[in-house]
Image (cartoon, rainbow, N blue to C red):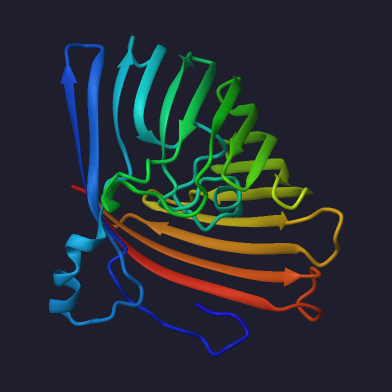
Length: 297
């Protein structure tokens, strides 16, 4: 990984999580998640040093109580989790996660309710960051916004879906409003999944009486050539201020997911970014390559 400077390499355990779900009858359940977050540049990179710092790296990103009528129908959920919004990628490096309030360890305490049907779903949420008095294992990083989100999706003919969404969030310094759309299309003969998302964001900084309009978008395709293999390509765009040239960030992504055996996954992710004017010869660039091994119990 790296930018204009010399490349930097690091190998480290990214995350270790344990999950538990306790059911109380047919309609109520308790979901708990906890684990140890990774440390890219530990002060002591030895095995003993990594194990010795586990207590400082404990984190519970999700824990909530849920009531629902069944696999479809109404539901109500309360606890710590991201409000339903956007394409909900696992990879937090994608712009539509990083710049919309859904970056890594940004999970909020949320109350969410809605309805999931066979051909449509609707979600409405209120959220707030963890209180400052909570221990580090329950804290968040990055944006600390309180607000609400709405997501509505309509599925079409079992092969496509379109959605509209909106989100508002207020922190101590700024107020953000977001509105966007999501599209999904499955093509059966070539076994290709097309995904798209576009969001317009207006950010107002009250202390400086300053506001800016932003845009973030994603367009990608995932191929499933054989069983156990997924290959994806994507184009991303983020403009920090639509009225100022040179504030854009453009990303080109390639990803390979390989499932050699049950419970195992290998992920190779590459991202090339052009920062600034939009042309590699005119602005700085940065690249990121990650090889990940996942094991699921």
